[in-house]
Image (cartoon, rainbow, N blue to C red):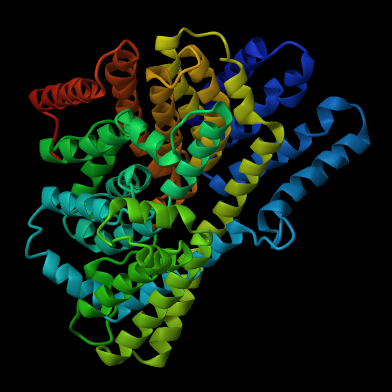
Length: 566
């Protein structure tokens, strides 16, 4: 009881302080104040604090959405009963907007397409487990995985290999590696971190992924508006050297595994896992897998997963005009060819749904060819898969509804506006990274953060460069993309974070609580040892060297302090 009172008091103080700071620095009067009031930060801050305080994500998101709906109407007439009823109606409309099939005539809701991807994926995973497919892969991997450290390294490598899409990465790697990490007593929290740390950061950096078309599209619009004689791809590559958070997170994953040291809440989870295999959430550990064959066959899992990824890549290739590009002299071995194809693809979410159904069909086919699963077992797989899909279903709908709320209240614009014209050029990139991180963490959307900050902040950087495409502009682009991924990686209301925790059978708040110190450490190193020196003219490569060296020193200190190895 005392601990709950202390947590509640601290949360109330933090909430009050953030609101006071927002009110203090809010633009005074004018259209900007009408467009983005200080209280636009209340819903996301409320959601995050309540989630950490109560550990009930659905309840926290629901209260935040309700508060956001009320804030759209009540401040204008706080004593009017009609305004309060309008606010309640606005809260319901936020959820309705999220699941509306056609938000615009002839345009299907992309949220529904993402939701449609979840049940067949979970059902496919259940069938792969029941048919012995995962067991076959595990038996093969266990020839190479001999302990906790190699189990974590295998997970990280799998995460890097699945670079094409963060959703596919999180679900496949989390579900496939969970039995192995369970066997070697690696905590579910650590598994969720490894999955999350190699999903959004890898997909954001990859020059061939489902992210790059969106990023390049936004950069192309900025170039057109500012008259920059560069393509979106060129700007993406210019900023690649300044993606310090993503590069450092990948380095951190491998360095901390090799060093064998954990710290903070993750260390407590790892210590607990060493004593007993975690049993929270649905388990697919080796001991609990059900097989209709008695002997696992890796082909039962490898072919469906390869089919899913192959269908995804082929679908994007066709949708992006790949065949026509070949006829015009393009080459499948050309990176430029693939970048152009992915950029031109317009139905990526629909293709992802088709890939999930194709993978499920292959899983059913191979379960009969090499496993002969009985119909009652298949029905049970469908039932368990759909049941597991309901949790991310509800959380994602509420998280997207909160994102709609933040869009309506213009939370991102408010956070951007309070910095406009208040910083010198060499500090603009570092502060922009901080603002992008706060925005993406508060709103839970990397895409939304990019859409808000790139068109508004890059023109400021361009002006600071003397209306030229210079160092400040390139650092600022990298800072926005990096900060957006920080939130996507560790915000409790981010869809990628939710996917990673569900696929790893880890409680969402536990996942966020244990990985947040790691993410904050990497973000701090990126800010202090990379973004700040680069703003002062240090080459980005040297910034990475300095930051990684500082990271290595940190782990060396942990080792000398005698921390329990991971």
